[in-house]
Length: 331
Ligand SMILES: [Fe+2]
Ligand SMILES: [Fe+2]
Image 1 (cartoon, rainbow, N blue to C red):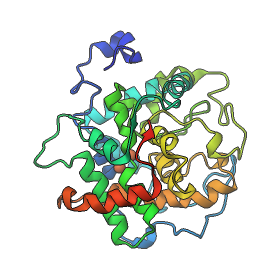
Image 2 (cartoon, rainbow, N blue to C red):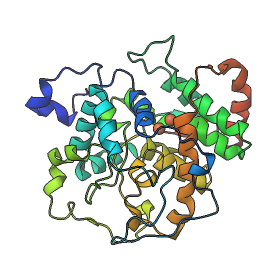
Image 3 (cartoon, helix red, strand yellow):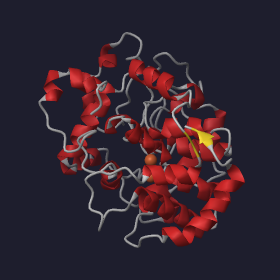
């Protein structure tokens, strides 16, 4: 944990031994592995909604009319309980910290700290190599490195014949995790994301942990709409702080809007899997959110034991990077 980690000031948390320096997870990707317990790969390809066929809209009062991606409507909501029973204690503790400390004020302070993009200057491949220096307590023989996860995601998108910007999105989507190397605790880098400044939706995993969050009883932030208006559009919603929002701001000038949606909302499981917060969506969100569903399929299910050949793939990906990015960008 870092010196300014708010959990340091909480005596209850000081007594708990984290398994790694920046949080309870043994390996940063334990969170993503755990998502597959919660959202196992669907059997049917048709399970995911198709692009170009936007689902009907819903409102604050009618929140179940729209099909979230990959959601089996026949599955009882109690499946959450099964998930909770299986989740490893380190993941549960990770969520407790995340839900306790992701307040509106915390997010605003991190946005002020990072969104000036004055921390580093580096190219995309350089950032991939930088992220790969993230050493955690993983088993090098069985766990994929960060570069390998990025390449596997990109390669599975490429194999399906998608446009090059979609492949590039797969390649870079987790680069925001360099926040860990800048001293941020795990709970402020990975984990499901959600809006702050309004009520924490019940569809967010381990919703009960929000009761420890100071915003839980806030007179405005505890209301369903909080500081926002209905149909305000996701772009004007302040999301919890993590690798998705940070990377979006780093790359927003270089990639198409569809790609930016995938990057910015890929951990927003409450919306893309649980159908929450749809009352904030505007027309553009309804049209483009389907890309987040399509991307999520590759992010969660492309991991395999077959390790990508980084040296062999590097020339192809470096020329793809050069098509969209200058040699160096601001982080
Ligand atoms: Fe991610
Ligand atoms: Fe990922």
